[in-house]
Image (cartoon, rainbow, N blue to C red; front, side, top):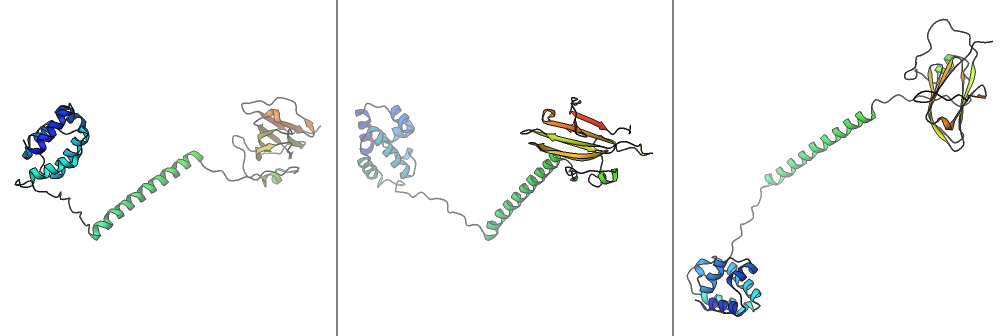
Length: 258
């Protein structure tokens, strides 16, 4: 038994600890602890740095100063063959060539560019699916306008409303034109779509006392989102019938002259 081993064994026994206790507390294998106490240095790691670390950990656990123990270790191993202080050689860092330095960033940048392009294409495709085809903007008829002929109304609305047929061709029937007025109650609002003589004249939201008028020569359709907020007038006379349909709708037609 070496001087270091004898000292460690005596201090462990004085503290009332077993090798198993020291092993559990310091995480040092019991075989290494036993080799230290017996002075069997050939069973320990060849690097003195590891052994010094074991000694320091054991001393802290036994609550004794590690310096005297480290000195005993130096004395025990100073003249033993193969136990001289050894430096731990760390692997030398490799110096990449200039080609290697640029290859990785270029590949990384290319990969990032591909990923960004795929994301942009995916977002664009989703946007197209969600938004659907865009319809050309249509100009609404201004409030108070009077259209005496279908040609005048066609200048403001260029295509029939969806789901509605344009006026059939043939001999025109003499009808009495009338004035259609739509008004919104104060503090209210409603979506509206107004079709005049087979052509869409207005679509949008009217609100807070707003009103619009059109001159009807054949027929008109008024669709609305909130019937309670909308008042419809024919030649100044309010229509009191409840609008029908899944989307509340008024169908108004010009009448033959008396």
